[in-house]
Amino acid sequence: MVNENTGITFNKKEKYVLIKMGGMISLEEVFNSIDQVVNHPEFVLGMARIWDFTFADIDHWSEDDTWMASNYSDGFPHGIKDVKVAFVSENKRNFNLLLGYKKHIAKVQTTVEVFDSMDNAMQWIAS
Image 1 (cartoon, rainbow, N blue to C red):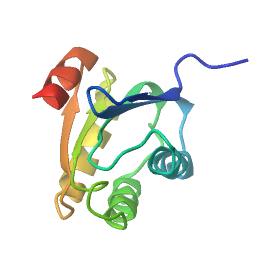
Image 2 (cartoon, helix red, strand yellow; image 1 turned 60 degrees about the vertical axis):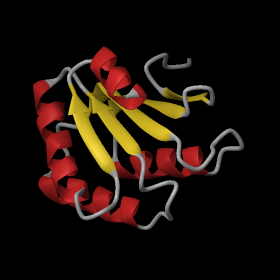
Image 3 (cartoon, rainbow, N blue to C red; image 1 turned 90 degrees about the horizontal axis):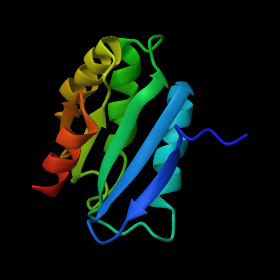
Image 4 (cartoon, rainbow, N blue to C red; image 1 turned 45 degrees about the vertical axis):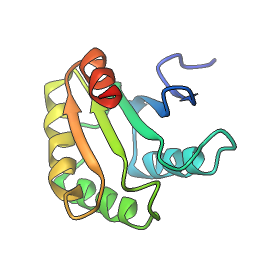
């Protein structure tokens, strides 16, 4: 059965990738999703990313996990790590964990914002 709350969608016209995560998510699954995106034939350097964690369970993530994720992101070259990245979650705990990631990613050249609605994230990506 396909989970409609997960998947990767490329929008070449608007130059962004939407990554939807659902269910209990491990860091390894996030890392695998990043790898799938940047190695996909539709991916082009400079594409912004929107991570939709609306239906994800990341309650088990710790501050150390967000630190490890930011270190993983730092390993990518320019055109991948120096783009806009939006995280979306209406869940308050997820939202706060994603804010922690934003704090750690500051050392990388990625511009990260965390949103509680997809509409706000889309507007920011388009700006």
